[in-house]
Amino acid sequence: MVVTPLMWKSLDNFAIAFKHLWTWPLEWSLKDQTLIHNSYSLKKLWVWTFSIFFSLTTAFVDTVRSFNGLRIWDGKLKSRTKTGNDSPEKLDILGISLNIIAKIVGVYPYFLILFGGIFEVDPFSVLYKHLVAPNLGREFKISLKLVFTFLRLNQIFPTIQTCHVCACFTCIATVGAHLLLSNIAHLVDKVDQNLSKKHGANSETLSETLAIYSVLEICLILSFDVINSCILVLMGFAFVFCVAANFISIKMYDTVPMPLYLYFPSISVLMPGMIKILLPMAIKIYEGAKVLNGKWKVLASFCKEDVKYLRRKLRATKILQVYGEYSKIMDPILVIFIVYAICFVVFGVWSFGEMAHDKRVAESGEMYGLLGTSRTSECKLHTLELFGGWFGSLMAQVCFRHKIKKCSYQVTFWIIVALHVVGMGAVYLGRDEIRDFFKKGGGK
Image (cartoon, rainbow, N blue to C red):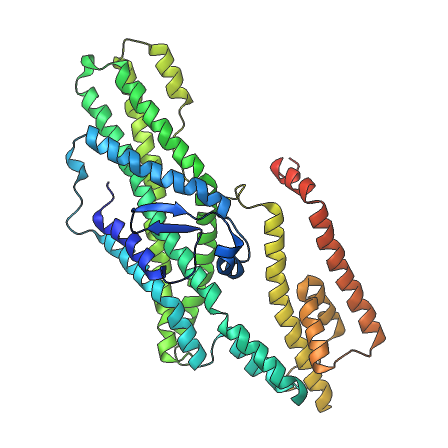
């Protein structure tokens, strides 16, 4: 298994698709044909930081070293091992797929923002049109419309960032995995050549291949945290996006405007395609390393020098494996704040909507509102605030002048706000103790 010219071309297409935008921490150099890392600088990467909210740039340094190291060793082993396995297949389906993904993902953000804005089906347009505008007084409508217009325009940044991360991870991970598989295949061929000699085999070949294998192991360890965390995140997001995209494709074809509708069937095909490309390679890395380990044991049986030393070294050699798991790059404090931010947004919007609905029903003087439901209970409102919706509730109180004068409600509301402030402050102040707790395996 080798890295084909089309696979390298997909990295060029990926770089071309995003070269006119802001600086990224991880980039493919068209001039040098290498992976490069841009050290973190707020002046250079402020747009990237704004769009992704947190930085993992320190982890990218080792990933770049790992990728470029694998490429160097692949060239060295190709020159040493002349086999027929180096020629690529006539029809490189994987290379074609990677180029298609790089091209399509480069166009996606503009397609989404353009048609989402024209048909007003982007999240902020829908929120303003159906939830905010019907419940606003004239004095707030102009100012909030300007706020939502600003938010609609700024959707382009996180959308481009998401597409860039998907294209970056898919293309670089695929090429990197094939470089690793190519190196393993060259080592297997080298061992096979010596096994054909049998009695002519010596310990030097085994020692040399073990040394090269150790280099490959170091390269994989360097990018261990990034790879494992990315696989974990990819599988989680792919599951959510595929379910949502399939539901919209099947059930909402007559609701979503046609140009925008085409996005969802393509996501239903693209996300499983990315998983289909990436996951088998992780399995092949383990299987290839296991085959190599077995051949080493056979070769060791023919060696007459340093037999005990070689066998001890073989027992200490681990089979290369790729996981999708929680790793140290996912700092527990960062995870807590990300989860809190998600709850803050989701429950904030929910709480805002419930307050708006309750205000509308209260003003109409009817027991049942437009949605056919009774007024929202204060218990439900406080529950939403407790789970992170306090800011959405506060915004609704200010915008709709609702429940501001009710003393019992305000007392409970501000107690909940105080709990949130104290809780997040305690997490920040006790961040070292929390990290130590997770490092010890959750107290086990």
